[in-house]
Amino acid sequence: MFVHTRTVEIEFGDCDPAGIVYYPNYFRMFDASTAHLFEAALGMKKIAWTKKFGIAGIPMVDTGASFSKPARYGDVVSIQSRVEAFKRTSFRVEHRLFHGEEEAIVAHEVRVWAERHPDNPDAIRAAPIPQDVIAAFERG
Image 1 (tube, rainbow, N blue to C red):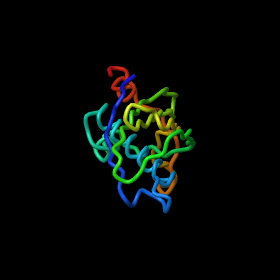
Image 2: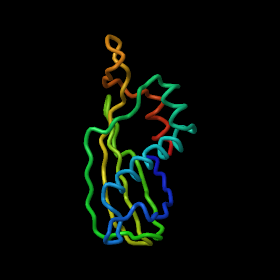
Image 3: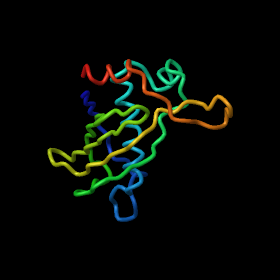
């Protein structure tokens, strides 16, 4: 499966009073990493592929992480992201955050391919993931 790596510099606002990254901010970084992963695999920004495939988005339905090393203001980390598995309407993303050569966090997200509900435009529902999307990740 396709793997995308991006580099992130830890900002002052990412940190808590102890000077380490406040853990919810990692999940913000992972959310952005998922968008970058899809952008790299599909060759277009999120706004473009959501329009192309006619979806509302890819909301998260489950997440978790295991933390083994903190990051601090000014550190530069890399995040490797990949789709571990596609199901009919959902997929699981794995993120591995490295601080230097050392793996610091392993995280996951389960997301749903979501479209607007035809009977209620304020609601969304799961939709089948297009084969074109899956194929883009299998080519990598």
